[in-house]
Amino acid sequence: MQLKTNNLKFLTKVKYIVLSIILLSSFTTMAQEIIKEKETTKEVKKAIDPSQRIKLDGVAAVVGDYVVLDSDIDKQFEQIQAAGGSIEGITRCQMFGKLLEDKLYMHHSIQDSIEVNDAEIRSYVDQQINSMSQQIGSIDKLVAYYKKGSEQELRDEMFEINKDGKMASMMQQKIVENIEVTPEEVRQFFNSQLKEDPPMFGTELKLAQIVVIPKTTEEEKQKVINRLKEFRADIIDNDASFTTKAVLYSEDTGSKRTGGKYTLNRKRPQMVKEFRDVAFSLQEGEISEPFESEFGYHIIYLEKIRGQEYDVRHILLKPKLTSEAIKEAKEKIENVRKKIVAGELTFAEAALEVSDEKETKFEGGQLRNPQTQDFVFPLTKIDPELYGQVQNLKNNEVSAVLQESDRVNQVKFKLITVTDRIDEHEANFAKDYLKIKELTLQDKQLKAIAKWQEEKIMETFIKINGEHRDCDFNANWLKKEK
Image (cartoon, rainbow, N blue to C red; front, side, top):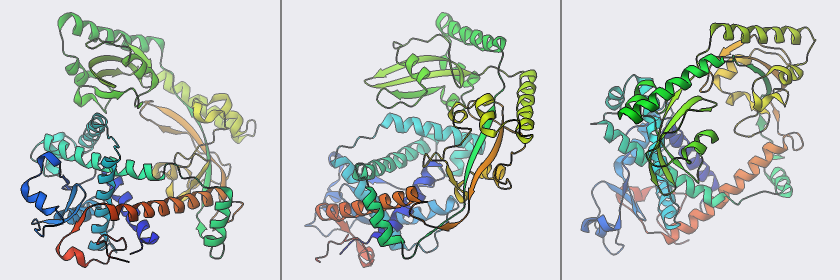
């Protein structure tokens, strides 16, 4: 049976919903079971043997080395609802089809020797646990919320979910990684798919900002350097615990609960360059001298080297800001705003002159959309906090001085303006070429994935059990002759 593109789009949409739930760590139990050859029981071997007709109780399907349980379908629905998503219009058969698709990706990611870095997944799970426990109040409350017997049980399940999602994602990426579109393909796609009934593109904004960051004093910097030197000396001279000091004193909220632990990989940069350079220069058991990054000052302890992977612990301290420094920064940006409003400076000139945000100051303060890397922000997709700051601004109107904080800066002040507002309009080939190019690429990628699925379904062992065989699949999961 021909695999239909529109069904693939539905399944892809559901997949993105579930993946976003995983990334936000808002998940419930999802049983995932991989059948490993050396651990496979006789009963399971019979179940995946095409010559046998034995159905394992609770097994809805087998795809290659993976099984889909009946309960997995229910848990997919529970996942979406737990994260506040809507399941309206999603049938049980459609969700089952999505699970079959996931297992197909996972099976062939192994066949194609796609490797998932377990240490990287564990490190990500550590960050998830830390972030979630802070939000809910404590690790015990988190364990109770997800109805687990222990923290380790929660960590194990999160590890499997993240690893499975990563495997499927990497397989999809491999399928489409070399796909590109030419200008002629974009033109043909527009003429054949969009010209007669052009889609509506929603309101879009171009934004610019000026950021002024209070400067810490040399005295405050020296205080944290001295404090870190004290920690280092106590650990080296008195055999104090680096892990305990990280838990008690580190200002890195993402790692302090695990004693400042991270796993770095030489081939996959994760931390800022200054951090990596110091970590990779250490010997096992060595503790670095204090050093500076954009986040503050660190010391690093190299715990273990495992090939390309480095298990490290670190302590981060941030120099305190004085009230005078904060006052000075605020007065500076207030004066800049007055000059812009009075016409003495353009917003772009002011950004170049005073903004502390290197990424934007040399482009007139223009913000880049992190998803598209252009300067356009669809109004409906703007970050809620940013939307609240710009929703009432007219073109070229300058906001009041706004105070914020982020991972790097305890306090920062900014001005923001709308440099252009593009109202809702029908797709236009010349005006919206980049958007149409993206739609063309997505369409080509979907077709490539559809073709890959159709081929792999035919060459992969797939067994659908019981009532699930009655589903009206768009993909040929039952391998019926065409």
